Length: 193
Image (cartoon, rainbow, N blue to C red; front, side, top):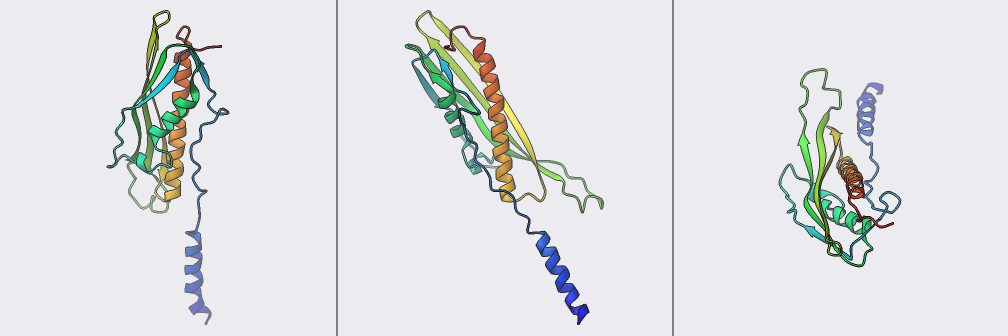
């Protein structure tokens, strides 16, 4: 009788080990705490989305909780605050992608019981910021690129994939924010006190 119960006990232990869960994905949020607004010498901000999202592999941005181009547009509208009496600011999205790139896996007996890094999730942003100020004849053009990648293991669940996409998007957006602030600070009269 004891020997008949042993396979059932082992099977239940093995199945319970597979029941690990991941924390639900947290969407990327843009707040004044993490991305402080910049008062810019312009009357209005125009956001132009020139990125055509692809839905074939390796592109997976369409599966993100917040679409990458929508995330950039929200960042621009909350951070690049027009506060001047004249002038225009254009924010053009040239690329806002998230891709899943397969990584080479090692073969062999040693790797059978290990959890290798299977994929790399990479967020890439290309934007242009153009400032036209008719009073004084000032103008500027910034071309910024940022990317960030996160790896996920073979055993990654759908929630793990969503979390990795959110982490890659937040990392890329943080890098883009830092670049934009550094470049805008070098342009005379664009940032208002």
